[in-house]
Image 1: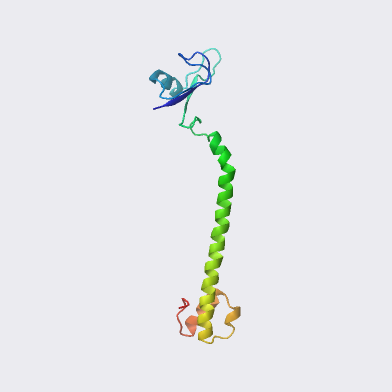
Image 2: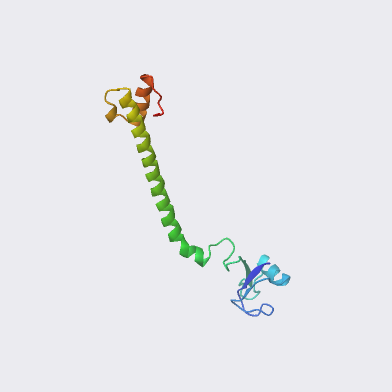
Length: 129
C-alpha cells in the first residue's frame, strides 16, 4: 500500500493537496519517477509515509516531539550520572569499612583506587567484602 501526495491540480482524478492512500500504479509511477509538469517544471506527486510526511523528512508530529525527546535524553543522562555517583558512594563506603577493619591509617581521606590498593597491600579483599 503506497501513499502519494498530489502536488498539482488535475493529476488523473486528483487535485493539489490530495493524499491518496493505496494509490493506483500510475500515480505511484508518477511519484517514483518524479514526473514534472512540462510547462512549469513543478513536481506532480510525491511518495509519503504512513503519517503523511515526505520520505526522509520528519513529520509534523516528530517535530513537535523533538524538544520532549531532547529533554528526556538530558534527564536520562542526569539520572545515569546520579546512579553512578550513588553506586560509587556505596563502593566507597564498603571499602572504607574494610579499611577500618584492617586498621589502615588515613583511610577516610583515600579515593576508591587508593583504598583498593591499600586493602590489597594489607592482605584484604579489594572488593570491599
